[in-house]
Length: 280
Ligand code: A2P
Image (cartoon, rainbow, N blue to C red; front, top):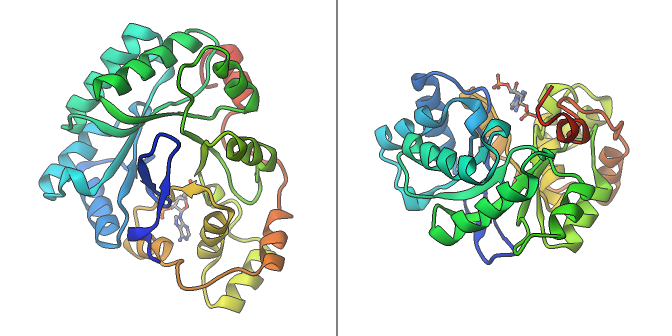
């Protein structure tokens, strides 16, 4: 198995690469082109952007300039809080597609749960899928309570829930809930924005396998069965993060990594974003 042929099947029947490439904070056309070219050469096929990242146009231009065929890639974007609501969400996705120079995205996510327009936004997502603007629909930063609430009115449930997930925030109850409801959990900040790379436990495991601590963390995600989208703008790290398919962590090593959990977030608390109707 390699990054290039490792796909998960979503509840709607579509296939999604398990490991993808995060584009948060990848800015500037040249940096974008280099990062996407390196990632594509290394076998990454999933590219994850968002309206909030402000780089959808650079992403679209990169794919065009690099001559990467549309059917070879899986593209995710996310609707920002200010664009939630039925009409606004649809208008904003049409704008995103223009910037991305694409007719459709593979996966469209609600970026954060907010109280305002909670159900209207999801209705728009269901309709956009029917219209072909996206192949699959999902959410990001939804906790169990948000998914349960959504289920009271949704005709179709999200197939992906992209959340902050790394060894300092293992989210085991949410993972279990998502699994039971056929929702693929996808980890953003899979490396904890670097906060976890220096942990002694990880260094020991890395040394035993002749790998880096980043590779050990990504392998842990892989074996947990979640999807994950590491980000780097450095060629060697992009390659390293894809090179995790030639070793295996033992169950004892998996348990040691699970035990690093400290409920520690690097990003916002979804419950508060929901209440305030915005990131804070
Ligand atoms: P850079 O882009 O300068 O390489 P996360 O995906 O958890 O948000 O973490 C991303 C951060 O980790 C970025 O700051 C990225 O920096 C850094 N990073 C990505 N891959 C590696 C790696 N293999 N080793 C060390 N740092 C990495």
